[in-house]
Length: 249
Ligand code: NAD
Image (cartoon, rainbow, N blue to C red; front, side):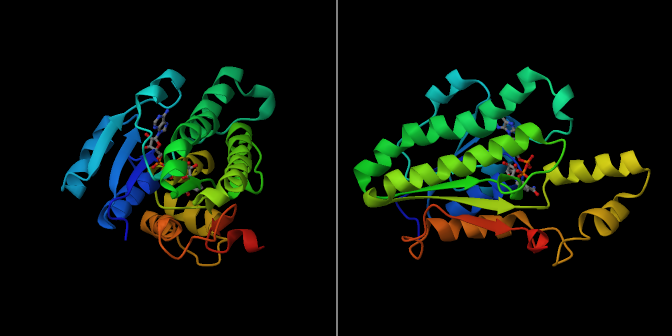
């Protein structure tokens, strides 16, 4: 399906990003996999194992480091992200800025750099892994929520500017995907409430989730692949919630 296409995926060393790389590579794409975590990338390259994945160990909060990344790609998946928990009035300004460098400035710099190649080829796909927190807020997540809302806006503007050039731009809005990011949330809540991790999942996190289970990274990767595939030419400027029914309440 993606033979001859080249992709760049950020946050590829773990969780959703790693699943996306595997999915795109199995569909025929060559993939540049970007992460700060070299060990995670090494394991990913070993898993895919056919030379389709090129690892790039880069700290995306270092904006100068972006200039080392390839820009002649047909598919850009902005996925890297980190979580935090702190009230606004106590949140360190430099940490707010660092999170925005990773989760908003980095997607802007990458899409800005990659669009000319996509425009020249008359085909491109930008997929931004946002969150339900790109559409709604939660207390104590100011930097995360603000960055994801910004990513939603950026994605729509790219869609408006690029539709007549064969390039689409969309967001995916997951919640509670089984990744190290969520596993840490579960462990933190278990410690905070003094209860087993299984109780955090069953009695707290999954209570409002209709499907009553965590989403698997491969399910998000399948949606990314669909948005990069031949049936998605007219889908642009959209946001796709994948939260097991949580925000249906
Ligand atoms: P994860 O922690 O498993 O993966 C995130 C990856 O980003 C890691 O490999 C990490 O090393 C990388 N990364 C972090 N900071 C970086 C930096 N400065 N430079 C380069 N790479 C960096 O988390 P995940 O759950 O797979 O999250 C992927 C994306 O999905 C994130 O944007 C997250 O906000 C979003 N998301 C996840 C969930 C969920 O339930 N897991 C829900 C909503 C949104």
